[in-house]
Picture (tube, helix red, strand yellow):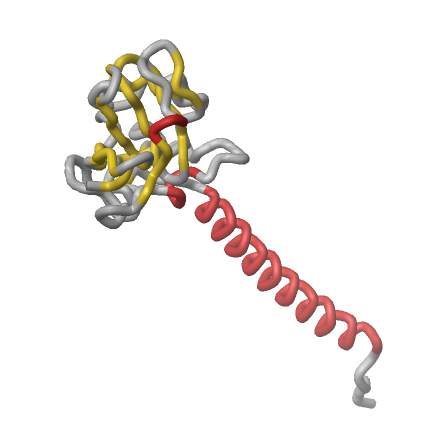
Amino acid sequence: MTDVQTETGADTQVEQAGSASTRRVVLMGAGGLGAAAVLAACGTATGTNPNGTDYAATPAPAGSKGAAAGGGGNTGGDSGGAAAGAALALVADVPAGGGIIQGDYVITQPTQGTFKAFTKICTHQGCEVGEVKNGTINCPCHGAKFSIEDGSVAGGPAPKPLAETKVKVDGDNIVAA
């Protein structure tokens, strides 16, 4: 007599196990690719932020507006992102020998009656500078310091000076020149 065996539950289990195994491999592979994409998106690289200054491989700290708050595409040394005649600050608000951070700018008065304006975006890693004190514009992120006279690097890791925007006094206002 010939043994004829009809399909048993064992054959079905093997097929199902093979399908489950294949599905599991595909899902794990897709999950791995997704994780890799997320990790790659978290990485940073060097490049140039909107105000034309270089930034390094570490992002700005939480709470900072970083490079997105830049000076409107300023590449340094020109009139910056402010339209000519746009009021940036009141003369009375800027102390002699110091300065203020107003809008996208740091406005300083290095000597009585002389006003300067610089981007408030640090050239080290795109953080916003946080204060003007003791003759320097100071970045809280990594300790970069810039001169209130010309925006040049006075200390810390910044590789370039702050980009200057030409200004003039118009009545009680400091305006973009």
